[in-house]
Length: 200
Image 1 (cartoon, rainbow, N blue to C red):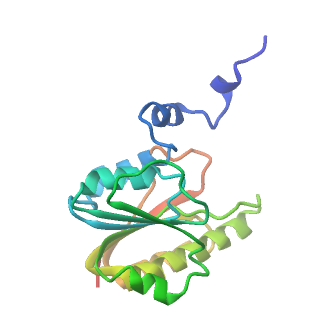
Image 2: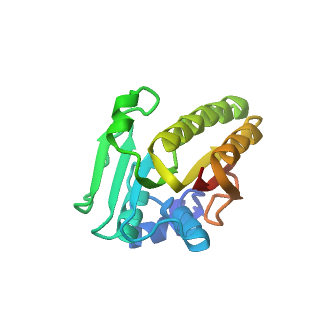
């Protein structure tokens, strides 16, 4: 008997179906929702910087939380194709090659920098975790230059040999930090989130 492809496709889980129903472009929104529910990082009127924002789920959710008085800025290698509210601004580019002047232009009054960036995976765990670490280091550098004092940072990283080093780097920049794995993360995934509270 032929099985239903959608039912048994491990990528088509209930979070993917729920995202489609709730008109989010990706299931990743539920990871941010879990983080927000637990820690309440994003508040009405906040200025948010979303690194690796495509396809736009985190942008939409952050825009809803900040409301029209907020300001949400997204950056990604690929353009975001969904319609977004007027208080959302998007840039297309590689944060690894963008110059300091660009990030200075964003100001130093950001309340939350969030990064759901992930590298193109190779299947080699060491290579993939190293690439993830490099992206995370760049995200932290951006956070240091754009966050206001007391601001927060959310960053996805693949667990690997560099994990502790990055965790220590976050600890050095923020008053406290937490490690969090959302329930909506796929069980086979090595990704985890490091959250920094209260930029020094």
